[in-house]
Length: 68
Image (cartoon, rainbow, N blue to C red; front, side, top):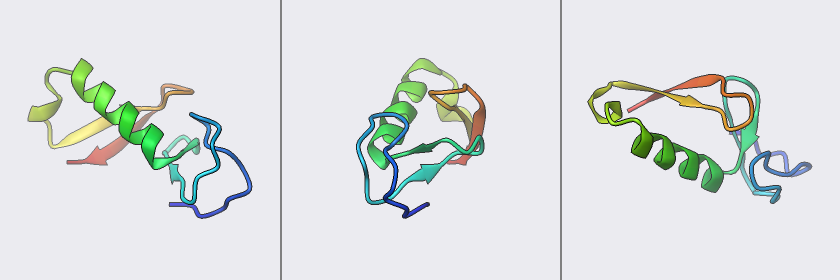
């Protein structure tokens, strides 16, 4: 997590207290990342059976590995 408050979230443009940086280096606030994660789980019917989730970035579609 990054705590630099000098730039907005790349998803919602709000300036959060903390950012989550994905493997592609794009940074999102926790709310945007949670929203993306839940949408991804709803779209991927097999995601609940996997030990690792590959979450695509909303900006570049590059995948970040998330542990369950």
